[in-house]
Image (tube, rainbow, N blue to C red; front, top):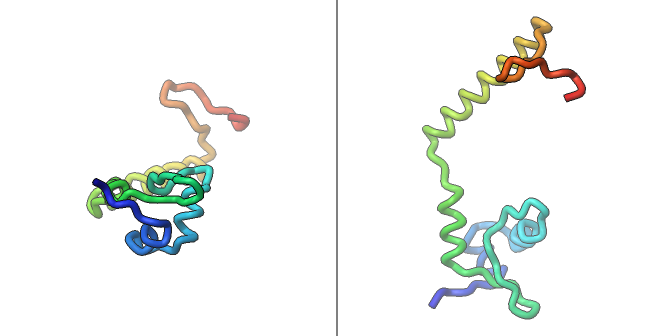
Length: 99
């Protein structure tokens, strides 16, 4: 049997405020953990909270590599702007300013 937690208990477990959980739950982006509505109560399954946290774990090495790649991409964009070069699609076609 899984353990169901109230919003307050789930917030303590995740080290966030109950309002943060409420915001995540009602956000259009739907970025919070899974929940169940039982009558007027909102309940979170501890297993879902653990899974949700696990899905968000990051490897610092991978994050560093990703930042390097993004930095190179931004640098390339800056260089194109400096040289006034047109942006080009991977298939070789030009991208017009209206795109």
